[in-house]
Image 1 (cartoon, helix red, strand yellow):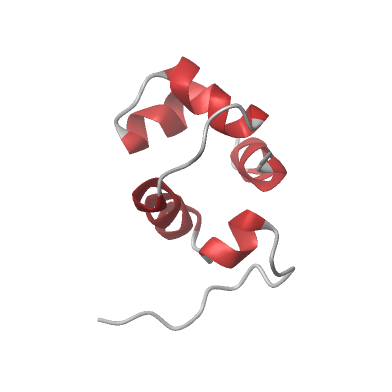
Image 2: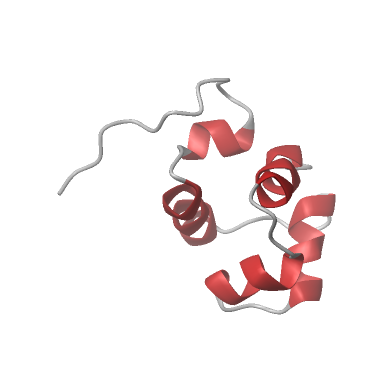
Length: 74
């Protein structure tokens, strides 16, 4: 499954793949495979990206067009 929104959000935030890979603690090549849909993204990484981009996992996965995140637990 290709996650186009990962690339779109990264570019909208003027970040490089290596920047986001560092956030996740993985290599740039590994992250690149997420964007291309060649590797399944673990839930833990989707959660980190949703928090990083201030959105929801549903938005990242393309299940909603609402970029605003749900209210989070404290």
